[in-house]
Structures are given as structure tokens and as C-alpha cells.
Image 1 (cartoon, one colour):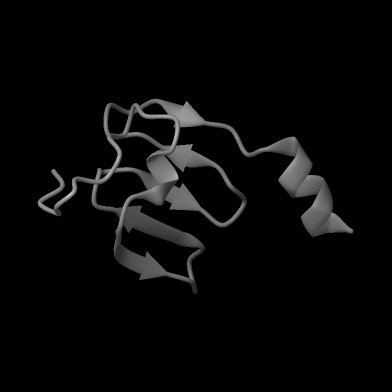
Image 2 (image 1 turned 60 degrees about the vertical axis):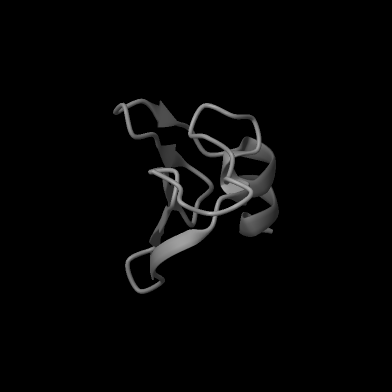
Length: 65
């Protein structure tokens, strides 16, 4: 999906969150990266193949404090 040079990390890469932001909807709490990953403000993710990544418990605990 990414047309940038150098290309952004793929949706399967460990650093997939480093891809460029394509759309962001802060009022709804989500954004779309150029690699097709939908990320949520709670650190959860939805990958292009439909798999979900649960929010990070460490970041969730820090946000609650």
C-alpha cells in the first residue's frame, strides 16, 4: 500500500506504527496508517488481514494514572 521512499514498515513488521498517517479521527479515537493498519487511542490495532492487536497493558495503566 505504501508509496513512500523509503517504504514504510509493513503491517506485519514489528515497527508497523512508524508508517505514515493517512487519516486521523481524534474525535473517534482512531487513525489509518499507509500500511493499512488502523490504530486506536488505547494502543489497540486492527491489521489489514482482520487480526487485532490488543492494547498494551503498560500504556493502559499509565493512561489511567
